[in-house]
Image (cartoon, rainbow, N blue to C red; front, side):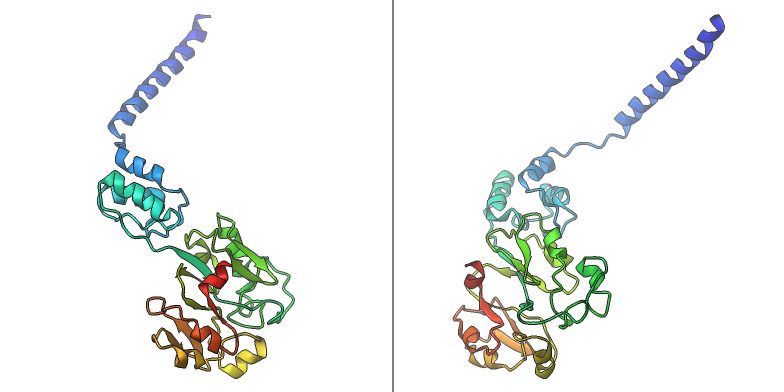
Length: 267
């Protein structure tokens, strides 16, 4: 009977020594808590989108706590979070420009068509690997919803074959921008301005063959823009939001109706 106690005692001693060793190691190797960073992180929305330029909310919070970043970089938090963080850090309030995602494609089933019947993995990233995607327009939205799945706020849906962003729900986190393999989505300042809803850079004749509303680089928008905000390069129009005064003349001049005013997107 006494022989049974020997291994029990040995195991107990080993466990005790190991426990003491772990306890001592936890004390010696403990990482000190950064309460300031933890407080700031609690103010952030927790989206971990990386729109601030850091690895996530914790990374941004640490940078703020150590004075390495400025408030106002958190797009999902917007002006409200920027004000809270500024007050906590004892800094002056910062101006935050609200931005929303815009899909630069109007290639719905009414305006374009698919060049193939795709039966592969139902993601845009996978379809894009096959001859540039499903759409007859090499630049167009494939409508398989990678952007929809990336959005934590339910701001995007696919309607009639093309992605659409609901500006009132969009937080400007840029997750959909990163998810789109065609780079069709960008963040645009939420103000009165014109936006180009097409990303096609082919010559007009080629664009006409694949889409009814694609930009053909006719330069009519550029000619009527008195602010110099519209520029046509490589058969494709772009609008500089810094210069755009929101007059709407380019929208009226566009024969393809691929220019839209931001307020119409919000309607």
